[in-house]
Length: 218
Image: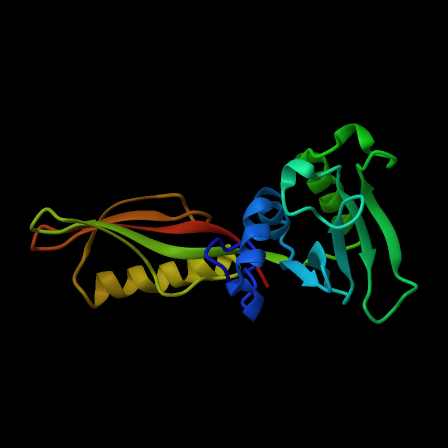
């Protein structure tokens, strides 16, 4: 999992240490980051003098993103984006996804990154070619200790459903009340999004709640 739960991880192969690869990755970062947020594993391809961007799809095919020819090292020289779906082992897989080069059907968009990302998102969503994602939930606590120090913590586990997180919340608060001596002073949210406030004899106050941690690739 990447630092952003819903962003495909960055590649780790040996090319990432070369100045050419790093330069291309940086030059086309807006497009690459958008692809990784779909989330598609994305890479800069440097092979035999050919420069392009690849985005892997779950059926073994991939998107090849170039321009009139290869992607230029300088984005200012770009004449538009040309995107095809291809397969290294199956030459019958060959689909035009988007083409904003001068003679392409989306030529009016030229080098605009937004339309190409919109087209790719629609393409992979309709064909279910992007990695599936799930919602993640956690138990979070926000506390003020007896020494007036603030502490905000997330539990060690992430749950793939809110129901599982609510169940863990119930077990945690039961232990707090019956084993650790915490006293419930306020609660709200019902069984859907429970929030409760507790204190102890030392003067510490703690809020416990179920949190939506966003989405992540499965």
